[in-house]
Image (cartoon, rainbow, N blue to C red; front, side, top):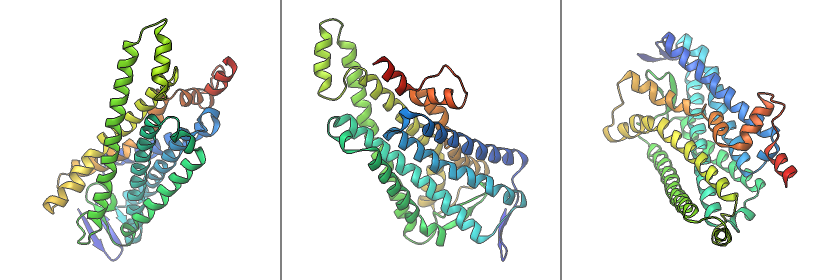
Length: 325
């Protein structure tokens, strides 16, 4: 149980298992995302649009990990001041909104790159991607200002302060609409990418060897799927699918239990386990990026082996391509 006093919010501290989970998640989120940033900065072939996406996502996610570590002493004490609660809720909600915005931008960017391969990539430089991501950061933190001012609450048995979805103002409905619109855009882009990838894989199977290779080149060049670029584009789609898919899996419990259920019933979920898992399972998602990039991105994998694992025989992907050209 928790109570609101003149000193702030008092609550029963988490048990030992919950404290271990929260501390472990905080360390994992910070460490994994700082590793992502370090590898991207050191790896020449990642100084591209995709590298900017990866680094900005890691920078944003690391703020949640730092927040988990900062809040840990207060959890042991079992008390938040009202100001601390508002700041905690604001940064948490802003970071989640920023993450959602970056994933939406990545989905739209990949979709436009595939559909307009000869015009869109020429216009979307690394600098422009960086500027647009900066805009996403700024608008997310401005959009979430009501959480800092009044629309925050302590989530019972989750041990965090967050957006208050039952406040009588119109803001919760605006925030929900904003979230759902981004989810719809992401889903639509991925349906489009899935259909394109399926069509290209089918075409690759149908096309044979020898004289058919010329026909293959002519057909695929119309859509920008030329030679090795086919596999490169498919790997990019696979990475994006995994990022967004895990985001959905980890946050679906929170969306259903903490957003949709209170909105339609005007009541809060009372199950302790659901309250705890719905938020901390979402935070778990923020520690998965390093593993996903290592498994699906060749440049990141080679950079990780070279600069983190210090394997001397690992060569930068871009450098090896230039040597063999």
